[in-house]
Each structure stands twice: as C-alpha cells, then as structure tokens.
Image 1 (tube, rainbow, N blue to C red):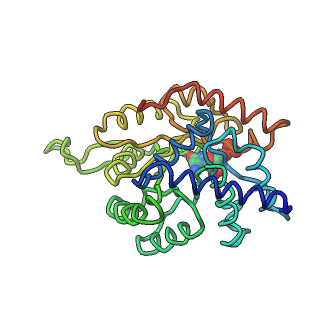
Image 2 (image 1 turned 135 degrees about the vertical axis):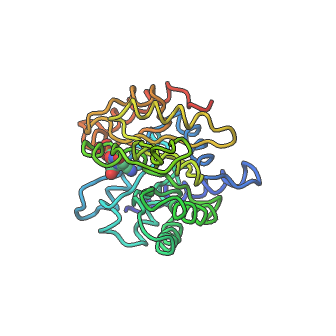
Amino acid sequence: MSDESKRDHNQGEDRHARGFMSTSTSIPTFLKRLSRSVEEHDGSRVVLALDLEPRDTLVDRVCSTIDALACYICGIKINMHLLLPSSMYDIKYVNDHAHSYGLQSIADIKLNDIPSTNKVAIDSLTDSGFDAFTINPIIGLDALNDTINHAHSRGVGGMGAIALVYMSHKSAESSYGMQVKVASERASNQDPLSSTKLYRIFLEWALASDADGIVVGATRPEIIMECREIVGKQKHRITAIFSPGSGAQGGDPSIALRSGADYIIVGRSILYSNDPVKEASRLAKISSSYPPAWA
Ligand code: 6CN
C-alpha cells in the first residue's frame, strides 16, 4: 500500500472512531451498525463478496477494491479466498480498512463445529476485526444457542451471527430442501413424526437462537418469500435476510429484494465486470429502491 493510501486509511479510521463515539452511549449491535452503514452509503444494501483470485498482492488488491467501491456498498464479506492465504495481521488490516469507510465486515466461514471450538474461532474473528460471521445450523439448536450467545458477548456491541437457511447453489435442494421427519406437537398418535423440509427447521432454530440474520439464496425467491413471512411475524426482534446468488449464479437481485431479502451479497458480477464501479453503483441503486422489510 502506498504512503498516500495509508494516510487516507488512517484518516478514515479517525472518522470512523469519531462516528462511533458521537452517536450515543448505547453500544450498537451488528444489525444496527449495518443499518448505519446503509444510511451512510446512500441506502445501498449491497454486501460485497471479496472473492478475488488468491495471487500475489492479494491484500493490496482487496484494499484498492474497497477504495473503489466503498461508496456503493454497506459491507464486505470475506471467505476462504482471502482467509486461507492471509495472516491474521493482514485480515485485521483489511477489516480496519473497511471500517475506515464505515463498512461492516462479515467472516463467511459457515461455522460448523462443537461449541468449544466455535467459541475459539469467534474470539479469533473478533480479534481480527470482524463484525459478524456465517454459521451452519446443522450443529443443532443447543450448540447454536451456545455459540451465538458467546458471539453476542464479544467485541464492541457483539459479533453478529448469520445462519444458513437455504443456500444458493443448485444442489442445495438435496440437503436444505430435504424432506425430514421430526417429532412434533402437530403429529398424531398414529404417526408421532411429522414431515417437513430441513430448511424450515434451520429457520426455526435460527430464530430461536437469536441469530442476527439468515442466508437464503437469491436463486430461491419463493423460499425468501416464505422466510420473510415467518421472520416478519416476530414481535420483538429483527432478523435480516441476506441473499447471495444474484448475477453469476443466475439469481435476479430485484426479485430477491422484492421477495423480502434485506441485503444482497454479490461477488463476481461486480468484481469481474468490465466496469465494477458502474455495476456496484447499479446494484446499490436497485437495493436502495426497495425499502427494508422492517421499515
Ligand atoms: O456473487 P457470487 O456468486 O460471485 O458470490 C457469492 C458469494 C460467495 O462468496 C459465496 O461463498 O456468496 C457466498 N454464498 C453464501 C451462501 C450461499 O448460499 N451462496 C453463496 O454464494 C454465503 N455466505
């Protein structure tokens, strides 16, 4: 990174710190921080998936991508593309850089282990400057509760947890869409098991464990709609719907948002377009034209 961009970066950090202190004494949770970022970025509800090719100068390329696109997005999402080839120091540097623009940062690790291991992972992600992470509900309700409680007690205002409910890729149907039998109050004496789809159980567990958000693929507008209806019935809590899979995976961002997604997660169709700024700006405009479902 050049001296000049480092200087800009540090100035941005100061701006971020001032913003944090001047708003109020209450500590904002992940969704409040994300909403504030939306306000600061002209209503954009685009989360940029920073899935760049892991070649030399990856951190510099990631930071210059943030520099170019920061005003069209409300957050970044980092996954194995960057996490595996980078040091914790580099990741913290990238997250600090994103924060200097008021952006939130999500660690897309689809956390999926026993609670004690999950907690160690969450502590490391907190130390690396992340604001939230993705988690796989297959670990079960008690483990989800335990892990998410821990996350909410970490960092400034807590780490957000975003649970996978229905992934965007084609074969998600064979797992998330699987018909399963569960013991339920609705079942009859003749058949003590009732039948449902796995993603409905994941949704129920995500809400029961106070997940801050859920992931539903933009390739599944009908499932977004179904989840929106259930999520919208909650009286005392907001759970945001994050929708990846538009563009490169074939989903339509407008349809995902109209179906009830709060945030679209987009990578390749911005990063590898002929004009990433134009494409990010286009998606920012689309996303800002759909009011958040809870407004
Ligand atoms: O817009 P793209 O298809 O290039 O990228 C979508 C991003 C990727 O980083 C992928 O890992 O969203 C992530 N993702 C997630 C869940 C899911 O069901 N489908 C995805 O594509 C997440 N998180």
